[in-house]
Figure 1 (spheres, rainbow, N blue to C red):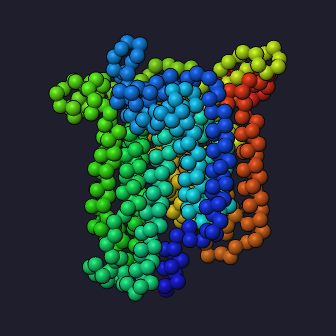
Figure 2 (cartoon, helix red, strand yellow):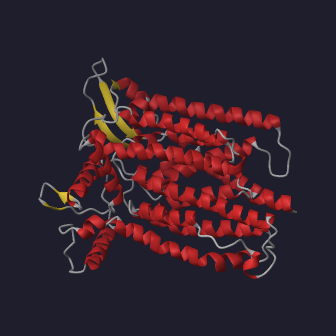
Figure 3 (cartoon, rainbow, N blue to C red):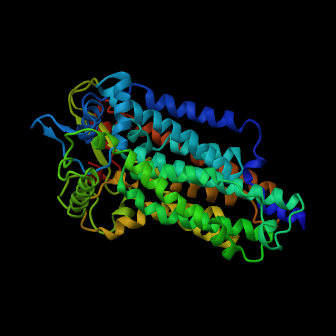
Length: 490
C-alpha cells in the first residue's frame, strides 16, 4: 500500500537526471544569443515602442508618464510595471534602441530557461523539457517580442512564473504528504494528527506576488486569477486523495481556504506598489483629481476602464471579428512592426520587415494539439492536461466576449507557453504507454524520432523566416515567398 501511495505522490521531477540543469542552460544560451544579437536593429522606435519606450524613459525621470509634446502629464491606460522594466534597460544602455529593447531580450531569455525547467518538472523528462524550451526559443512571436519594447512579453513572463511557482507548490505539498505517510502518519485519523505538520506554502504566496506583477503589466491577467485558485484547490484535493484522506474536498477547503484568501492582499499589494512613482510624486495624470491619492487612483482606473471598453477604432493590423482568438492560432493576421523598402540587399527592389508572426509549423500545430491534449487527458486522467487546458483557456477565452474591441495578434502571447506545452504533452503521450501498461520500446523510439523531426522542422522554418523577424533587407521577391497567406500577412 505504501508503494502505491509513493508512486502517486512522488513528483515527476524526482526522476530527472543530474544533467537536467546543464541541458536547460544550453537551450537558454542558444535562445539568449538569438535574442541579444544585433538588438539595436532595426533603427528607431518600431510599432508601439513609440509609446512604451518613451513612457519608460519618463517614468524613470519623473516617476510618471509625460507628454513631452504638450508639456503635460501623459494619459496612459496600462499599469506601470512593464514600462518600469523597459526603463531599467534604458538606465543600463541608455535611451536608445538597444537600451529600450534590452529588458525584453533578458526577460525573454530567462523565460526560456524557466519554461524548460517547468516542462522538465511536469513531464519528468529532460528530452521533453528541452524540446519545449527549443520550441519557445525558435517561436517567431516569442523571438520578435523578446526584441521589442512592448508589454506582452513581460505579461507572459510573470504569468508563466506564477504557473511555475504553483507547480513547485504542488510538488512540495505532495512531498509533505508522502513524508507524512512514510513516517507512520495516519491520513484516516482525526485532527492535526491526520495531516502533515503546519508549514507556510511559500511557493503559493510567491505565485500570488507574481500574479500581482502580471496584473501590474496588463489587466488581462485578471482572467488567470480564478483559474489559479481552481488549480490550487484541485491539486490539493488530488494530493489528499492520493494520500488516502477520507474527506479530501472538505479538508482542503478547511485547511487551505485561509491561505488562498491570504493571497488576495499580496496580489493587490504588489499591484499597488507598481504605482508608487505616481503615488509618491506630484504631477501624474489625474494625480490631483482629489486631495486623497487613493480616490484619484480609483478615478484614474475608472477612466482607463472606460477607454478599454470603448476601444473599437479600426487598425490595419487588427484581428477582426468575434473569432479573433482562433484567427491568432491560425496566423490569420500577423502584425508588421517595421517596414523599409530602401535598397541594401544588392538588387533594385528590396524589403526589410519585422513581422510579428509565430513560426507557422508550430502555431498551426496548436489547434490539433489542444484537441489531442483533451483526448489524452480524459483517457489517462492526467492532471497535466487539465492544467495546460485551463491556463490556455484563461489566456484566450475572455477575448471571445469582446467581439467589437480592437484586438491584435500579440494578445495571444500569454497563451503561447501553454500551447507549446500542449504540443509536447501530446508527443509525450505518443512516446509513453498508458499508465498500467509496460513501456513499448518501439513506441518510444518512433515517438522520439517524430519529436526530434518536428523540433528540427520548426527550427528550419524559423531560419527561413528569420530575415522578416529581424528587419534584414532581402530581395523583394524573397520577401514575397515568405508571405504564405498573401494579403493576410501583408
